[in-house]
Image (spheres, helix red, strand yellow):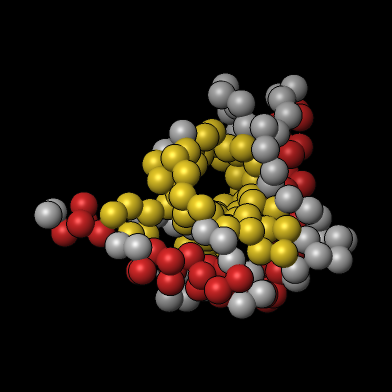
Length: 159
């Protein structure tokens, strides 16, 4: 999909508890890490008698030497984590979202579309982005929802 083919939505999200497994990986290691993290996070939840409250996701940050990932599932309040599974909170606030349909290798176009939209609409990033996976990798055209916390640029500048 081309950048201009993505429809951007802005919504307010409430804080969301989630269980994740964290790691630092190279680009080539993302798929294997995420698969293992989902398995471990889900096992942690089911071991507590809980179920995910939404689709699996991966939260990304990009230090200069690789990719920091936190991959797992939204969960009900009260989950504890443990054994390499950590409880985090997905942040409350405005989130710009769009859906990428197609191979994961093409999801960068969705990020570019959101970044362009933010620039054109006076918004700036307000935290690490994440991807929610509506379909598994076995689906020919998987759907990936890209979420980017954002806020008006004038709030940053203090005007």
